[in-house]
Length: 249
Image 1 (cartoon, rainbow, N blue to C red):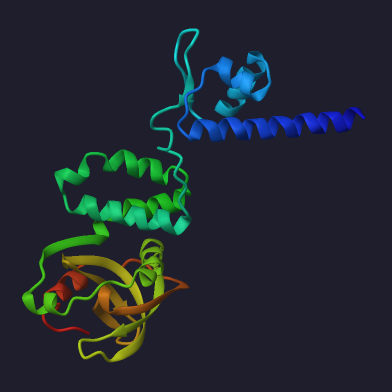
Image 2 (cartoon, rainbow, N blue to C red):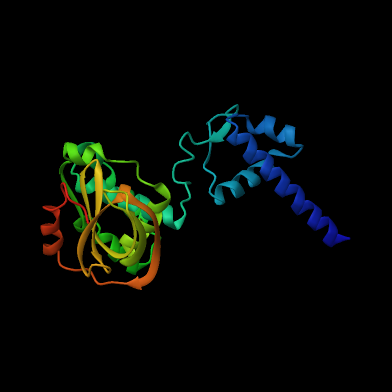
């Protein structure tokens, strides 16, 4: 009987904690007196419940004074955002791109954001993040010729491309050339190049056994492979930039 009562009391408390959390998240700001009365418990019990919710990470604050209310901190949602692994990679690359563009508007909080983002990553992955900026190159504006054929990038294809780029993994892509001819390629994504608004992968193409550039908006599908590659020297890829406009691979 004692065990059953203990279990019932624990369930009651869990339900009560859920009630308190839901009420605070709704934006209400009750006094501890009114809230304890509404829940049918003593203020002492309520204070224990509030402390438990704080330990769970809910940032509860209280106004000073006898009639003060309790509420969540005004910025309680900040820092509680949960990202999937691939989402974190996409964000890391976006931050590296912003850093490479040297825009004062974008640089204000990049370093602390980047530090917080990679804090939970493995040491091996952190070392890869450190090289990202050097692998992203920003050029001038695309020519009228290139801009006229620019299409929206396939967002589904970008996630495996970003992960493969960070992890130095090969990608199998379906690529459409300037004449809309499709081909299957296995490539090593070594560098990214922006000729605004057109992004290119500066890659080693296994089909041609040579450096090639691939417009991201012409990649129709992409799949990351398990095969890794060592980063090649920049020079051949930098030389390939001169051949980007107007020709394509």
